[in-house]
Picture 1 (spheres, rainbow, N blue to C red):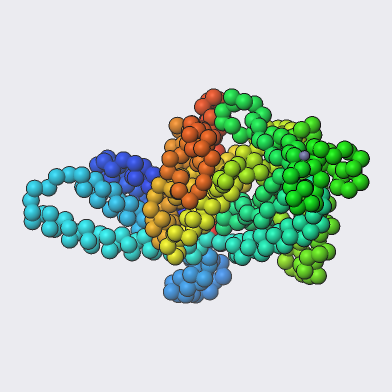
Picture 2: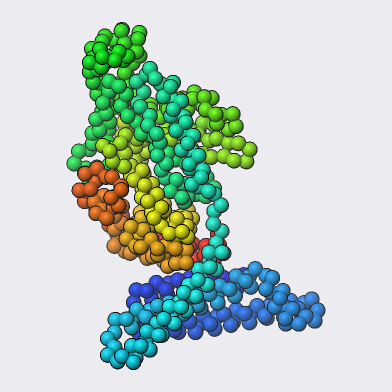
Length: 511
Ligand SMILES: [Zn+2]
């Protein structure tokens, strides 16, 4: 175990040193790295000697004359030997590669007037590139094969979940044809599972957002909860009755809520939305979620899925959550509700705000659909073998139990995906991208600034439609609390070191 712990420490040191090398390419750093390489080599030799010594001790205990080759074979069968010897060999390759990388970057800035030495340098660079490619491949292949990646096919299940919810929406429309419940539109897949990664691999929740439209004779008028507050994230949705007398005369059907008396409406049409799902004049999230909960239960038997799957409704407050199960399979589905802002990808959603208490009439600004669209675009454009989702998945695994949220990590990765070529996320370079993610997060913590991905970001892909107010908005700092509280920043830096340790362990042990 001591051997394993030491190898872990060596790996930690390596990662820290890689960080340093990439930042500063001076002679002193290269000197330190060369010294480190020699030290790692010595460590490797010593560790192998320790293994040999342990084997000899074992042999003397058993008093069985076993040849060294036999012992080595026995050691090879032991996972520790594989883990340590393989890892340290690859670590040395990595350090060599980093040294070479730093040397190349350092030397590229220097002028060289001699044409003969230029040719030699070009040849050397070509050779280095070939060798670098081999180093990278070896190292990356080792970690890629060593890590336990999740088996779930998130995309396939997400698609089935969207199909189920859309079937429910069609059934609900039939049930609701005479009422003034908001119009349910086809759903959007949102959240990590739909995007192709999951921070919690055991309890995956498949989220969808169902857009709500105003029913006939009603209008939805969003209002800011606190005008002047920046950023504008909390809204209320005022429901206003509209005259439908003309449509009533031309098409028949619904009575005008404004110009028929209550008795007539009660007898022939039922109550307006203001009398059912509103608190005052505002659409109530909890009342709407409660009605949706009842609708799912009522419509379930109308769906073909009900013949094979068992439905279990789960506790709800601002969304509708349920589990479907069949034999060994099960999926938890959460339906969020949202009112679209114009024709944009931004919704006022039923999701709770970050405050401790969210009033039932508050609808929060949600970029979940825009985020899902960004990941869809990225995944479609990325070349085969892209590891951008696996990088996110791997880092998300390390977050459990730390103060960092998966939202923070996702924001970091979205900024990097949006500013670096997608070809660079190929699986052969995933260690570099993991290093980029950690460095970006570290830099944000030091600067106490992580910009929200959508607020005032001029580099958003044009396929994602943002409301003008969001395009014009000032960048919003998600680390504002760190800027205001030095103790919180110090704690965040401590947790970042812990995060790095966890990632190191995950790379070492594969889980
Ligand atoms: Zn009217």
